[in-house]
Figure 1 (cartoon, helix red, strand yellow):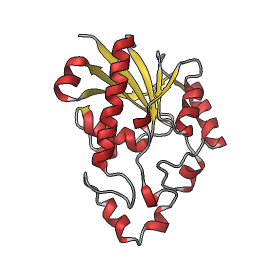
Figure 2: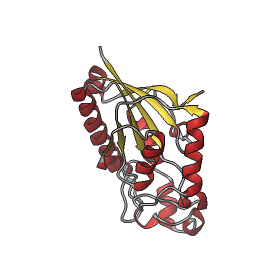
Figure 3: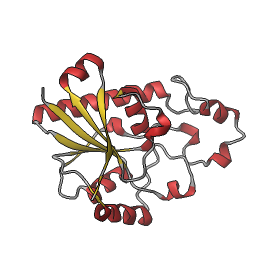
Length: 205
């Protein structure tokens, strides 16, 4: 049975990442340092040849796609946007550490949400919709290998929620401009809403 491969890659570094600030929907661009780091990675690593890039609509992801895959058609997918962090967005852990609602949020759980933000359960539903949109598009267009540029939180929840084998979320963290290759078949997706985690991407030159 035909399979479809997606290289799921985290966007490059922003000024907020360098300052240790939580960012969700705030539309930060890449920092100069982050853009330079990505450009360096294109020399250090071999990025896959892909037929299309699916990206979160936030600037840090679109700019990452333009650096890593400059000649490839880009298609934004609304549901690949980062988790809505509500009142925690734009704050550092030091600013939030004494707040009871922050301590509660750090405990985790499917229904746990930041004030005025999104729960893990809501994020998982969005990820499912994003995957369904991307997979259907790849199948209809017969695109066998594509890239997906999204956010750290989305990657962790995507692979922990839908990936096989089951891997603890803490082992699914990835550096900016790096991520994981996944493999999808129509049968496994339709039967179990699952895909296979193949390993790390990009590849060492």
